[in-house]
Length: 398
Image 1 (cartoon, one colour):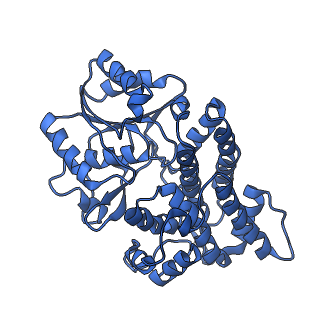
Image 2 (cartoon, helix red, strand yellow):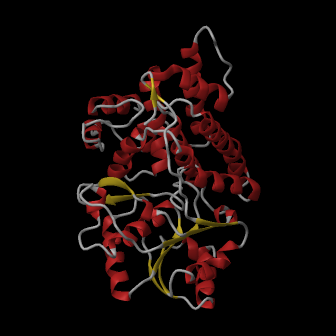
Image 3 (spheres, one colour):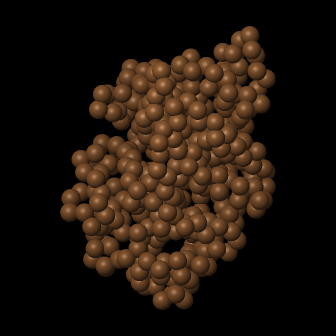
């Protein structure tokens, strides 16, 4: 890490984003040829009946058959994908000698597919990766037909799974997790419910903000990229909530969701990620939508830590939310930026308090204690939080 006089400056980095993006109208018809490049037998993995109601399932199956790709199916992915279904998928793929996992859905389906892909060639329990007991050395390739812009999992190295034994929600990052291709047709998002669209937007914004709030200096370029991506979401989400079939705005959101989490915005800087770790306990225990949980946690985290770097929070307020700079009282400007974020979440129909998620206050201490920490017992990087700090943030979210 490069340091001058104790200041952390733009760090050396290696950036690799190997996922082939196939973007635009009717691109799902290309899935057969894309899959065929990686094998002749795939596991078609998806959630419930929505892809059948919209006709997407039929189009995917037709394309696979036309390309001579054999497939087997595993449905039943739930939001906050479960380890038990991952185990089922691993055994199925081993038994059927599958070459590729094809995820048709959003982040939950993609993450479930990634976990299956890592688990097939591994001798132990795939959960070992999520507990930090082992590192994946090989994995089956994963392809994606994206239906929900939110998690950014279609081009990311991350994977988040919930273990029903203790309701532990844990993430695991590995370059092997990056899908080999992602087919992204914004038209597939026209039928999304309003709440899913809004929750997805909060998830995208959170991925950007986790990277934006950094102690690394001299990161003007990625600051500007992050601010532009945030402003894109802020502009276009209200448009699609009013007009769900606005292709241009759906396309802007879909592409922004990928850029938010393929690590381009992380280059040369160290992100925070405490809000994600805290939220994982909310959705792990109460099964709330991840994005909606982040809409509650992130403003609370900001209120707790903003004094650590008031200039960065004022920059966020001025550049992202067009708050007028108060040069005599920068703290006031910083707080207006946090309030602007909270107001935006409210305006698109998201809760900003635990009560709005239906979460009572009787398990706050349990969630704080379960929040995943580093080897030193600290959560996050921007400000190293203790479990006591996490509890205070959860109290601010009440």
